[in-house]
Image (cartoon, rainbow, N blue to C red; front, side, top):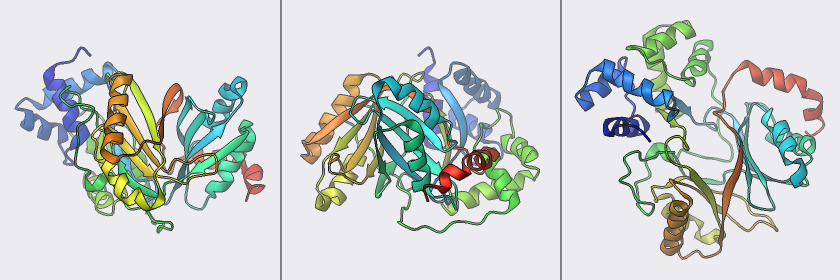
Length: 350
């Protein structure tokens, strides 16, 4: 990466704690003892390099009333590209990868309040030609929070405290919030890339047809009510130098999950840690997503987790091909269009 030390520190800062104030770039400038214009220019530069994907609100899917799950599918190898294309057309599919396993296609799917997640998963199973599809919803969330250390100081075996916003509440049944039209307009705008101008939330207010104070008050309320986990940078992993990622899946006994899960989540290189269902052909109950500059970094983290927990029955699922990696867009018109187009198919699976 051809970036300066200050840019690296700045990227860490906007991932860890982006200031929710009317002039956030000025607040960052004061922290780094530079001008506001310098901060804006530095962020524009790392965006142009493809390292910084966007600055935006990171909402909690379940807290907004959406239902979601990780899905594993067995698809004939000669049909996998076409299957991925069909699955990618779903607006709730944010990530879709080919992985090195009999379950070779892995995707995440979310659906809006009032929709049946099972119906959508079953429809995608049918449309994609999957031989077997396993729905793997979150049973317990131990950690969710991607933070890529840009300074190069972190080691694959380092530990880090799991912060409150990295382990949001998960219940089998959660209340579905009711938002005003103004709040929905703000949600639609703040999930997009924050403008690189002195008062970016004021620019968002113009698009949402409300005041700057309305946007700031809404963001603070979303955070307080835990609809929004945080406002932060979203990085392009590969352009940021993190070229390897692996999903470590662990066969942990049911009675040991509450002890083992938090230990695994405590590793800094683990961005996601969940307890998920098991099946007769799938004994792995805890999933850990790890990131590294190279494959050996991921392997070192997994080895450190195994040594720490004593769990030896595990496997590593590597990303062979990335079919889709985007953010789920909440309360946008594309949902209505997709559901209307597939209404009859969805109805047949309810």
